[in-house]
Image 1 (cartoon, rainbow over the protein chains, first blue to last red):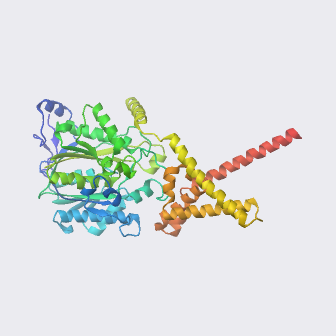
Image 2 (image 1 turned 45 degrees about the vertical axis):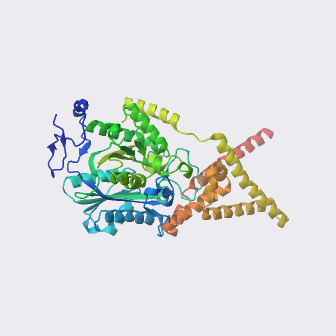
Image 3 (image 1 turned 90 degrees about the vertical axis):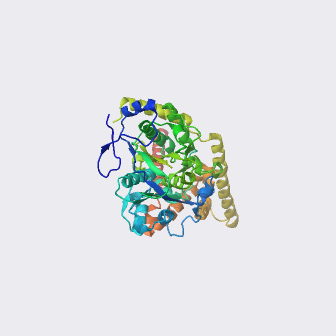
Length: 364
Length: 160
């Protein structure tokens, strides 16, 4: 019954006697049987000491508008191309998060960043500007939680003091990459989603004030055979379900133990599917569950099922969710961003869409 | 390889998704397509008729060509102003089937890839959206021509 977990004593793998999360007695036995090894517990409590979100005008007009402090009304941010605009936006997010954490660029030990562009160029160009050690990550729209999971692991293990985790996406660049030219007149199906123009950055620090990341569950690539590129919510909901169920089982908790459960960009339809899937597994997702994609746009903004893209979950988490955590309106949050791991080539070749979702637990 | 249980699960899931996913409203879409497409055709006819009044000695082929040119130029202009996709969002097939849709597809692609330079951007990617239209246009018109020829030959053989 020795469950080995990486608890952060540098490189040693030690058996974990005590979990930081509250465990119910009746579930302890069950938990010990389901040793998934997918959930990491961070005993040293790495903290989110700074966070920042940058969004575009359309996101500012949405229901979460008042939580977004940094707004770029110009679609190109004064740059020549939309790609440069995305780089600029991501850079601004990293910059203001660093400032928020009262640090300088030179004090950032590592930048973990990813985006949706081919060969994650946006992140790499931000890293070029910042001149800090950098690792580029790609996990489609769940890049934010992948960055947070890895960042928290590295800080918890004591390798680094401050790690910046950043992600962003831009509507215009994503349209070009995955769909049609911007001005091309095409109709979208009513279940499509709208790529969010936004970027978010969290600074994970060893010391300092802020909510800490206490656990993280690493997702599996789950494929339920969905092939429709427009119906991302349906493709990604099973991955979120799998990860959240694993997290619940590994920590011995359920939905009522958290003040807020927030998924990445399933959209309105996707989050309904997610609720159904979770109730199929025996977990009831109540009022405390919401989806970044479903809440970022208003119904009247004609964004179909809501927002999507790496920037969606990053921007909402680093503004709306983090602000409520800072103010202690909520104290325990599960954040699981969801990503679809396909490319245009794979889907034109008839492959179905695998999806992934990593979860992090953030507590005060 | 997917196991039997997975195949079953995926089948069940896709049935569930098909049931829950909102559908496009058919009657409404048809009406909008008819209206928007109809308006474009009406404008085309107006252009044709006015050129016929201005240049009475032109035959109908030349007038048709002029009309098409004006429509293409107009649609490209509207694309440049960022207005065409707004009609298209409502109009659907009503806006992409007429020649204006073809112009929009070319103009939007060349605008989009302008940032990558004239050779590798605009020139290379201009046909990225309309490529299939051209290929299919050539292939199917060839097929149509062959069928017409065949019918004529058979008719001549029976008649003769």
